[in-house]
Length: 358
Image (cartoon, rainbow, N blue to C red; front, side, top):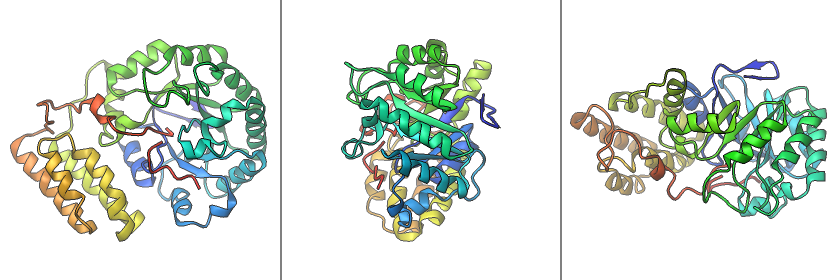
């Protein structure tokens, strides 16, 4: 599928997740089969641009094209200025966040709270599209609550304003991440517009990916929480869609190599003090469901240096490799239990508890 001048080779995308999809993780997902990866959401307020957090979120050094920056805000002029600012610094696509359900985001009328004011949505997308000469896309939800699902109206409005792609999480803001995603609503949006539509929500296995494509008619799918601790899900989905065969679970040796590279880039990106703290969640996602993972995660939470983390993880995986060729989970399977991968996660912004837009 095409977004502006960018021809994407596959139809499996990595969702933006606050506190997760930093540059090292996006690069890893792209290496493992994601055709497209969106940044953590970036505050449009110019007053926070100099902060360390925002500066890191705007760091795209070495990132493969297209570089996609997701903006969050509620003021059309401020968002337009932020879009220009980011394009000047390398953004090749601007994505507008109207899907984040986090309370502190919605309390300042951002994220999915915008869906309650369709006139404002129209002004925002028009302002941003007119401000930049790169594609503008929109990620949103099916509505504010089940009584007002306005996804189709928003889609038509965005298309008319020049938005070039829609990503729809199949739940309202009120639904959070409970219940089943509304694939029927995504299908109606796809039928209502001519621009590409990406289906998001509960895509946690190759088989589910095919089901979502068949049910919605979407042009692509976006994977969020299921990629936490399982970034190879992108290549698994891609192979299944192309061939109908299931990609073998990664060997322990392969995972050791991937995680070593991920951690090295992560520590280099964040530095020692912040790197050791921010790496914990990734390490725990990778290991918590593995045999012996619970005890290992307790130990990991007590380590205070990057070198200690790195060595402990490598030793844990070395022991796992001596027992089995492939990763073995507590339930005896070699496939990561998808339902458990999402257990306890607040979501995606797709958002997590670490979501701090300002």
